[in-house]
Amino acid sequence: MSHKPRPKKEFKTMHHVFDEFTNRTIYKLITRGHFEGLESPISVGKESNVFSAIRKDGSKVMVKIYRLETCDFNRMFDYIKDDPRYTKIKKGKRNIIFTWVQREYRNLLKARHVNVNVPTPLAFLNNVLVLELIGENGFIAPKLKDSIPENQKEFFDRIILNMKKLYRAGLVHSDLSAFNILNCGETPVFIDFSQCAAAESSRASEFLERDIRNICRFFGKLGLKADEAKVKKEITK
Image 1 (cartoon, helix red, strand yellow):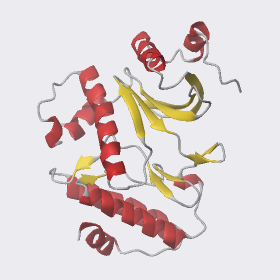
Image 2 (spheres, rainbow, N blue to C red):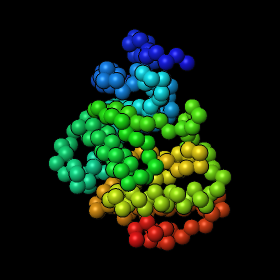
Image 3 (tube, rainbow, N blue to C red):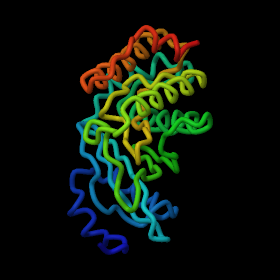
Image 4 (tube, rainbow, N blue to C red):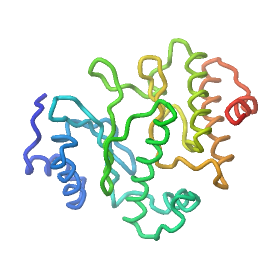
């Protein structure tokens, strides 16, 4: 696959799902040197698409693009309004989506600062986020749901340790499951941090319990027994 950026006309044809505003945002990030062009889709969701992208030196990054017309901004606002960092946010569709992206960037930075295994956030602009690409030997790391670790107990313990680090940093992932943990060479990497809640928010305990339940149930189906109450005590002690 060529490492050259795609011509503007071809880019618009291939990514016609994006509106002109999003295309302009992508080109601004290209102009600023964050990447040279989108390469191929990594995942396609209801609200966002994630692409691999080529950098000038031939390395790759991930580009997460929130679709302005299909995002559930009411759900986004429900998470954001309880965040003490965004008490003055004005309710408006694009404003909420842009804040959502900025929030994911800031949450990832904070998680990286306390050594939680997450992609390094590299840049954001409007509804587009640029991230470190997680993988090995040129291959993108699979999601946990698609790649069961060989040592399940060790992998589970690493997940709980990362949740504990995150909690000590004042954050709760709030949507943790086998769908947004990558298995990168038997190491868990947490992704999707836009909904991540401040630990002092009113629903933090509810979100933490839901995260714990998701993880314990997933590994329980694999035969690993875990007591949710004990796990919560370990994370919050």
